[in-house]
Length: 241
Image (cartoon, rainbow, N blue to C red; front, side, top):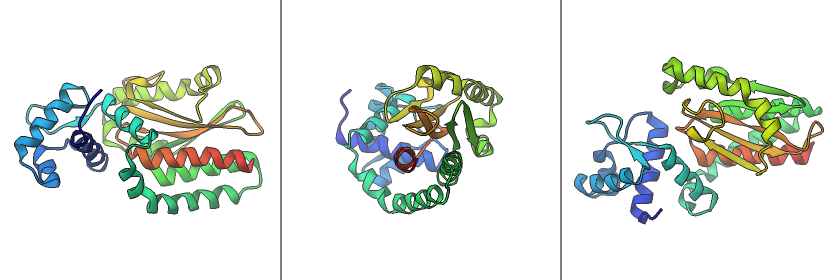
């Protein structure tokens, strides 16, 4: 998929603005940011929409990212193309990582360290946190997830509940092999219409060579921060345990 550097930057700004406000992003907002005309931004948005990277939920509304738009953005982060995002996050990320280190280091037992890591991920991301401990799935921060505006729709709540009910057996049977695994919206194996992203890190623990820790949150995420924290949590748990 070919998009110009400006279109890529517009997509990034739409994703990050939408993550903050949960409101569709209009061309006027983008025009001020890029210091070009609204007509220019509308043309660029039309190209992004034609590629399926953003969508217009209502005729008069601004644009919101699609699952494909989030996937393009996440892939650019993983490929290291979006260095600007990573640099902007560095200072905040450092503080978050220090908090994660303190919480994990304070525990002497493996299960307590994993639960502590999940709990601090909940605090740092505002998402639902999860981890496998032996044959059980530990969850924390469920109320965080359902406070998000996306889940005013009971059908989405039910889809999330189905995903959580089936997540532990799915992890055990499928055993995703990448150090960091990201499932966005429709990519989720269960609850495809729940509009959530599952971000999990695989690590070795006394319980299993395939233990997992991560978060579940709306597709409207600060992916750079969350991906870094989840990956770091997995790496540190493997090192400590």
